[in-house]
Image 1 (cartoon, rainbow, N blue to C red):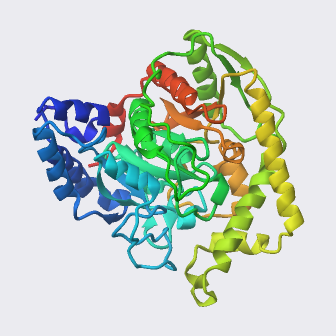
Image 2: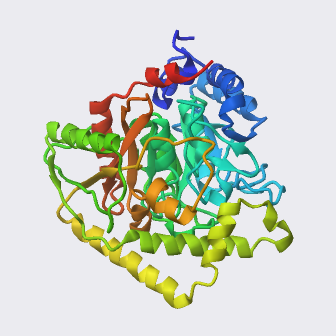
Image 3: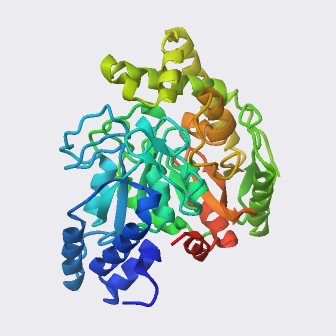
Length: 469
């Protein structure tokens, strides 16, 4: 076994060591599980552990010994967010109101990981039905940020963010309807990929329907691209899934940004809040791209007020969730979610369709904007991670003020967007920016994200050193 702890390694590194017989999947899994035993009691990243993980790692080890790995992720530890179905496990969605009956089929993203040979070690926590950005839920309590246990990992992919930062394996599946991959990735120093809508099939559709996607959360851009290839395969259960494109998404990822036109965007149809550290990080990321030869300039895509659009989509989705839950169980729900749902339950069809028309207006504006610009660079979150124990107050205002003002626009427009960590603030917490490409140009988003990662070189050693014993 190599001197470095395998739990700290990227998926690419693990796979190289497996191929050279210098490390086995069982050894890698045991290293990860030792970290889980040490840190998860206070991180609280898992909704359920997979008792079959060791057996799966052993089967992978036998395949590598025979020189016959079954796929590009064979033997790599991974986790799945508990909004997605995984056969043999209930999908609890962070709620005390949900069914405890195990799912009988894997969601498409989970199936893709399994077919690629990944060893799934468990299901990770989520905010209730994925409704908010603070990382707590009624079913599992508070999930904490490995960089600082007093801070939230963000949400709704709270457990995936915390698991990635705690080095509970290199690959983690999140979901994102308004920023739920990118926000915890930003707070936890990870790479978070929101793909183009339809690129990674979904079944069944969750509460947020046609603005929600599944995607990778990893510690490196290349790992995210590797994982993306396993997840982004056509599935007939999703009628909106794109045609199959079985490529290696790492191809071209090192091509850089020289000659690309990059727009630094500071408006989303309104002025999203951004603290001084965040503004400095955004300016620094713009310089990183410019120093690599990109043509960088400030620009405004002329979006409508995306607060007004997303607020309606979000509110109606939560109203539908509430309506499906028996009245006698509604007292078990997160009170903030119930409040938002009830406030929006009387929305007229005309108002909702007006929001859909505005969503298309935003999508058209960004499509035209990308006729001029290859990439868009924005902030990702208004601040660094806030307190884990902070109560949820006035959630409708918190949505665009504190949680997701920089991220939800790209769910409305369905574009690919990647959160990339580029700096630590004065308190040692990660700060990130967001790289956005035109619809279906996920390859271009990976290319821009990798260019930033190479320039920033945020070291994993900082993360490991930050974790309390």
